[in-house]
Image (cartoon, rainbow, N blue to C red; front, side, top):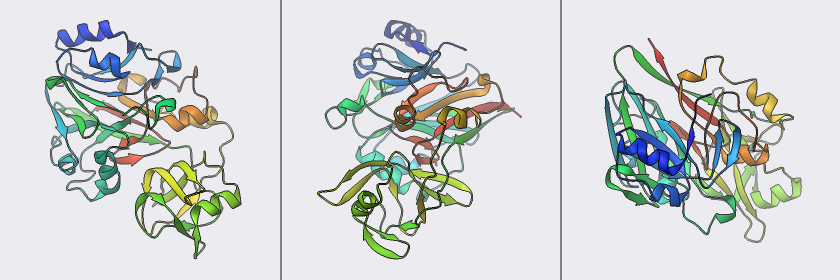
Length: 329
C-alpha cells in the first residue's frame, strides 16, 4: 500500500516542490504549512496504511496526479456555494471541504439538491472536524493554501479537468438498509426536530426515541429509488424534547431506523470494490463508523482516507464511505 500519512516537514517539502495536494490533519500542523497549491481540513482521525489511527502529528495527503494539468483552487462562502456545480469542469471532478456546523455546511446540506447543475459532474469531499472531546469547544477549519487562508466558515475546493481518455466516477459504500420498524416522516426540513409523524400519528420524536429505547448508533434511512441515504443521530435532548442530526431530514420523505448490523468489518469488506486501490484517487469514511465499529487499528481493505464529520458524494451523506476513481476510457 502506498504511503499516505506524512510528517509536517515532509508535506512542506512537497508544497515547496510545487506538488498539488489535498490535506487532512491537526490544526497546528496545517497552520505550519507554507503557501502553495493545496487545500485542507482539520481532523485527527484517519484510515492510514496501518489501519485506523488517531494522530495529531501526521498529515493525510492526497496528491493530484501529474497527468492532471488544468485545475482551479477556489474558496466559497454560504452565499456562493450554490455555484459549485456550474464552476465544475466539463470533464473532470471537484473535491470540496467544508467545516462542520458552519453556516455553509448547513446551507449545503439542505440545499445542494436544488443547486444549478446538481450531480451533473462528480463532486466528492468531506466535512472537517475535531477530536470528539473537543466538539463544541474547538471550531473545525478549512485551509486555502494559495492564499494561506484559514476559515471556520465557507468551503475550499479544487476543480480538476481530466485529459482525453480518462473519466472520474463516484461510489458510495453504505452498509445500512431500512429496518422493518415504524415509518417516520417529518413536517419540515432541518438538522433538529421536535415532532415527527410516526405511522401517521404526530408524536414528539425525542419521547418516541426514549420510549422505544432506539439504538441511536443506527441511522434513520430513506430509500430513494433503491439508494439508501442515512441520517445519523447526533443527540437526543430529553429536557428540550428535541433530536439533533448530523445531516438534515427532509419534509415528506419516508424514513425507517436502520436494520442492525452484526459484523461491521465483514459487511464492509464484502462491499469493497474489486478494482485495484491504484484507481482510487480519494476516499473518506464517517467518524460514526470509526467510533461505533471500533476501526482504530483495523484496515478497510486497501482504501485509506480521512475520517469525517460528513461525507460529500454529490450531496451530504452520513455513516458511509465514499470514494472517487479515475479510470481509462
